[in-house]
Length: 244
Ligand SMILES: Nc1ncnc2c1ncn2[C@@H]1O[C@H](COP(=O)(O)OP(=O)(O)O)[C@@H](O)[C@H]1O
Ligand SMILES: [Mg+2]
Image (cartoon, rainbow, N blue to C red; front, side, top):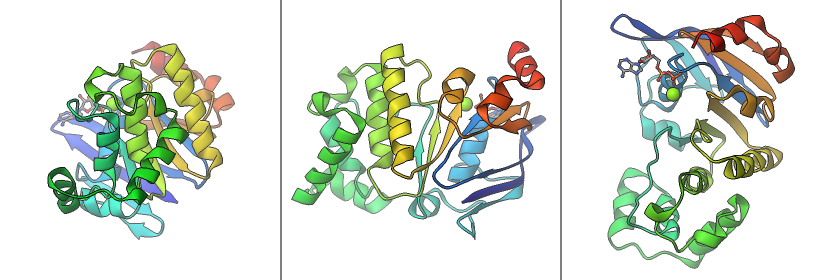
């Protein structure tokens, strides 16, 4: 459903993404892993339109999305979880989710100022809360949540609107083991529901538990690709991680 070919992005002399090609398939979890600084977040930013590519192409469901605007790409069905948390700390979890409904530029401000939420909107957030397992803290202020709980709320926010592909940038970095497991189970559940997921992660072990296909980057290049078992035993991959 998503094809990346010969993608390049340089920052001055740094070849952050240097001729990267790979594919994401429907109903699968594709993991993009690699040591810190290998170019993973830059790929994330290129797919979501936050950065413009120097060259190469990104095709999403047969449509070229290379260098389209962030809004256009998200309206085509690409949902994102950023590496940095982006919740409104002074609002409750419920309010954060309500604001995420139909979160396009204009509607967002309408929501924030005087939009009357419908029964439908409330049903929608309750359903999502159940799927993600955050019902018990819906009325808490986002700022009072633990880091891992915030991540769960952000995942809820990322999946609340219709989408075809979910891209997560390090959803479990800094998350405690218990919530890590919860996020793992949640991603499995989403996959069973038919979601296509691109899971960007530094932690190799976490992704080896759930990914169908793993792509490994190092210094801006793809150095290995295969199923988790193949990746686990790949010498180049182990060396890249050791050399970190
Ligand atoms: N906006 C930027 N300006 C300059 N260098 C950048 C920028 N963003 C990323 N880089 C560099 O590009 C490389 C890849 O970074 P990044 O994609 O964030 O890696 P990862 O997500 O795998 O840790 C790193 O060397 C990083 O310092
Ligand atoms: Mg990163």
